[in-house]
Image 1 (cartoon, rainbow, N blue to C red):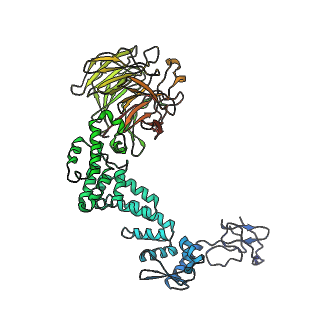
Image 2: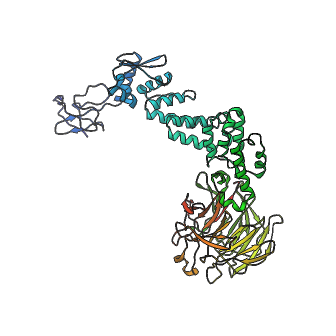
Image 3: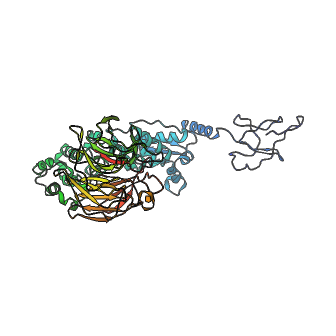
Length: 620
């Protein structure tokens, strides 16, 4: 925009007028100080920060870098100790400053200098509980906006910034400490963050400690922990240990570091160790250990753990926080393949209970639908299925550690819709469909000879069947026989090579998910209708089988119907993964707690999957 004036007429200074909202400075003629623009007799473009009222020829000026230049001037006054109106005293150090500058950056000083308190009028103010050097650095920051962060002074600086209510400095100090986290210092940083009320730093330091606990327990900070802090670590489900034995040995190491003083805390801390999950050999050694034999509370805990091992049939009555496995010790849940929106997923995802996150873990060599997966020696055995054109008898083995696939001997029979599980070493491939007919045949794969052999056939042909091993027997649950879904169940005894019928389920189920937990067998979801119309009769029902009484009982239903749902035990809960609800291939997952009889929503898969094979690998 340009303003034209006759060149022979000089421009009179405009009358002062209040600046419109948005301009920092307004009114008065330009001063020609080089920080902005003034209106001349010659037409010129205007700064975008200025507005001109064309009818009155008024100009509003906003200086560039005004605040920066002003604070530089204030800094020079500070250096020369001119116009200073307050002296801050910390320790033996006296720090002159300007109240206005301190109040502009610190809510602490703003409240002090604008309230009716004695410090508001004092020329010298004693600052208690603050490091003199940190206070000096923060006063300098008030004038310059600059800070030097050093590892050896960062905690004093952060503590001072918290006291003086400088949120910008608190944030940058916290991020600096996050970058310094190490197994040798994370416990100290976590405790410091807690004391200062820095919740985000506390959370990050805590998560770092949990993730790296194996290295943390080897450092001096761990041995110096007070008992009340150690018990928080021992009680956590999130410590990343391979087994309960590791955390027990960490406690013993801590006690022995100062045996005389710490023995009195032993029974309190031992209560946070999940003794029932320790190997029986360790429990036997503990009973007569010098540290425990004269401590009645310790002996009670050891006896409780021994009963858990000696009376497995009563374990359901002995459930407590000490019988619940820590998240890192239960293994990793894998979801392999399944039907998705692209007519067949080839990806493998894995779920970490501790982080509650699914990530991609591998890719299959090709598409498989209605196949089976078993786990031996922490490897995935992918068996049968169909590729969209034909039914398969092929078998492949996937090693998650090396991400390598190996081709194994094929089954004797092509099968899709089969059930697969491991029983006492061998893998069993049960029923299914060969592309022409429904199957009642069963094959067994011997890991030693790597050969498939037939065993006794089922009483009933079953496809989309659920299978599980329980108490040394192989259970075959529901499925389809060609005309309808089945409610029947039978079990195979490998020692007699015979199948026997059991009590039928309350509901007929094809595409049923089956898993075992605490001596019971669970049948989850599925469908109950002819194949041509199964979408209208998908099931959210869940029922539990008790082999002692040969009876089925309905338990809490799923949150939604799930056909072709993957079901697996992870820790002390059953997980129902994916499935089909009649319209959508589901990516949701929910977990069932037998103690509360409730389902809880968990983290979702990255893609929707129906008919995914869901298994657990103990050491991924």
